[in-house]
Figure 1 (tube, one colour):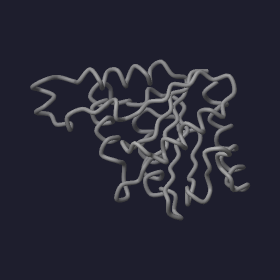
Figure 2 (cartoon, helix red, strand yellow):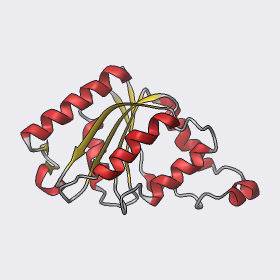
Figure 3 (cartoon, one colour):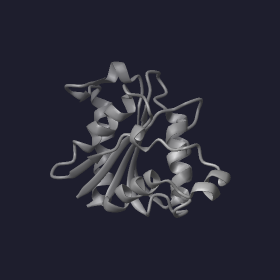
Length: 177
């Protein structure tokens, strides 16, 4: 099974990148590709820029990673109740290649934040819109209070949250395999 995973943030210390990497590494025997949105920094999408220069190669490269995968894991940073601008821009450019951005791939979508809501607003936005963009959302998880509920050594430390995570991950694995 080939998995692509990334945190939907451009922060060099992204807690969402940590959560996405953790999730991907829980899948036994999977070939995992970890993407960093900083490697896909492109001009802010506009029709004028697309007409003038076409679709950037970086958008095509990102798309190829998705095409090569059996499943996609994303953990969303929540910026003012929505996606980070870095993620939104990658998504906007990719939508110009094909309206079905996610290529009908199974997805495990997550969010976390330092606060008690764990990025629930952005996670809800993704779960409601991604199916219209060619996604099979087959697992969904929010990790509240990241710094209290996650450690680099143990992963998710709260037992009930860990069980919920594992149930959602297993649902995703059954679709992606």
